[in-house]
Length: 326
Image (cartoon, rainbow, N blue to C red; front, side, top):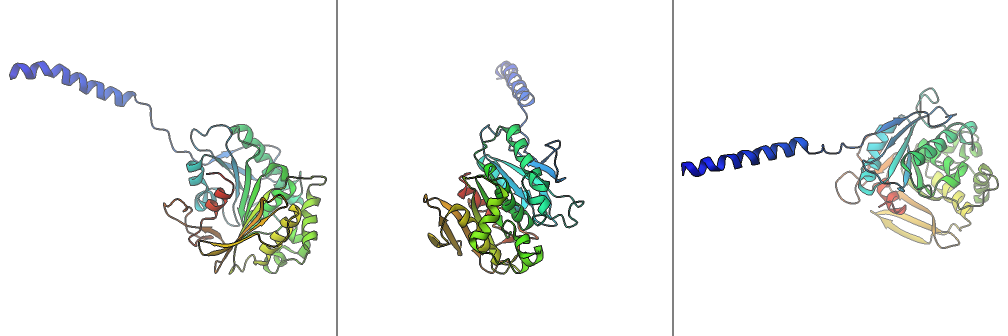
């Protein structure tokens, strides 16, 4: 027995050494992706900051989502609160997160109401467009699958981007936001937000068409989320967005689909070609904020907090599915 044990010792030692070496020489696990600031992305006439989230090992040819925060928020908080970074990891796409600076707006709202910031080639709209170009170049993203979304003032800026740069975006998601040119139509951003502007669908559509003269399409599809108890951005603005973008797409204002999703009224408007061009979620009883549904279920995402409202429906997930991100 003693001799057998002695004979086995080199074998045991060898095995232990081999195991130790395998641990020491094993490649370190990939670190989780994190939000990164990008500088030098263009002339940046709107003086915005650019942040992005790129999942580790993201292959070329993947979609890009531009996500614009609301007033008093920032890029990092919006990235995590909405659930967009979680979905980016799950489905494989990158996220661009513009950030407003207090020097542009004391409440850190994107200036969706300033003529100099919503025109093509100018101000904040041009800065966001430059971020898209930089992101596509850096990650070899798919230029035909770029999407833009935002909350409140960010939602207003998402509408701006689809009007001023329609060729860059396949679709948009406006959460508690405003139609393009609403402040000009109402004579004041506050009248637009708290009351709404009086325009015909054709007048609303003309504002979009004037933002990109000579453009004949295709126009981005639009999804809108709006709380019925939102007293900061009145639900009249969702009606105006439907009027504006059905007109742009040449669709009528009779919903082709009227059902409920997670208990909330949901409508889909189809264009002349039969494709969905405008989609709405009317969130009964919800105030001003981003709809989220925290949890680990397949359809759950986001985290509840100020302006992130747990209503058992995650807007980012619904948008991702509409955009076929996952």
